[in-house]
Image (cartoon, rainbow, N blue to C red; front, side):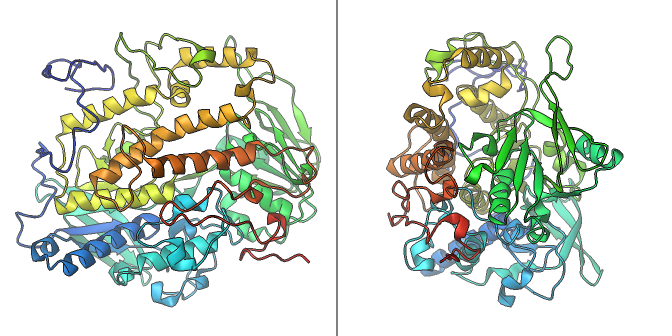
Length: 629
């Protein structure tokens, strides 16, 4: 049997000892379209032995659901052009369930009327899932969101700035997924999935749905794909919410998903944001644009995107390093924050408290949680467990040379490593539920959510159509274990897993002089460091692209090609644009990372170069047009 508890590196020709936790780790690339495996579960992933096409349920019509439906449409068009009857017979019959009245998932705004009625009903039905607010812009360069089969040039007919408004990206995605056929004919809108169970005897999924008339229907499918999105419901920090409710805070308390309702009320206000994530970064800039007086961002670990911003327009954002709300002032309008770091000896809060007066609005930028409650426990156990089992590396394991080796040095790994999930979930294997690979999950695991989800959709379709046979449970676990070892080679991942490494890392970091490149995120050396980490997640995506014959080639797991390196470099330059902002520059009153030099950015497909914004981002409306004189 295999386990996370012990990973043994042995020679490739050494046989597995089934009575031991030690095993031979095969190559990460041992599983290819030409490799055949039995599932070991009497569950066939293909439908070649059936008299009817495979039936597939897909839950959610956001980016994941749309990508899968489009992948099916693309394959159908290709097979029709080639007159491949056998291939057409292997195509699944897909039914999608979407609880909202229109497609797009979290990319929709609360104004559903912006989506054409041809893409779903627009009867004003309120959407119960979180949506992006109207004024949101993307915070990743658009080049990471372009599709090879439908480029930005195909849609926009010309060059674009590096960053775009949410609405333009949604319009682009909708146009792309309907370019081959009307995929929304396969979608049941205004339909909520209430329960999903799997019958071991029939090897079928039973799905109970309810439509907007409250009529309940029971369906049966061979396969089920969850594409409900990681942003299914707002996530709060209950202990901090208690501070505001129990101590009578007089201001508004909302989640970032409610920003759309606040746009007219932030002018002149002092605002506190809980969390320093990407949503805090974006909302802080949006609040400045809307005229907020001051924004305070509290940070638990000071490691989120907002904490790395070099400067903010007109110095209207203050980061409260390692501070979290601890109390409310007597008048109910001030918030008392306290240092969140703990003493290793006494495990007590340390540091001085900070009181921030006259706060009108508190916005929780604490992320979201996926909605998995309708899945039976066996199908959602991969998420229910907050971390993977603790594990350890082989005794002879060594970390390879990397950009921080000269700083941190050679560190003996901890005996037990934390099970924090990074790219590997112990119960999932490349979108498959290991215990039941007929259950698949479509969600992002890296910094390129749109691209990552689209590749995963192709991968799932390849499983279903029989292009890739599913490995045995043992092999899936071995592949995951090998990937864990690969991730331990990444300093930023090992930092969270290995206490020995984290302690040494922090010791060395704080001993460096202030002008050292590693303490200067805007330095060229730090950018190279960023690219080293970025390379790993792109190589994982390149591996999956090759496996499912995705129409974009970024290289391989072993080595990125020029296109993959280009993507990595553009992402690093996007980060550098944040780091290199300074409060003493002549344009500090208005410059943001979205006002960056477009020079390093161009299409991975067409090489079309990015252009400058029409004006300063602070002066541009939600349509991307300049509104100042």
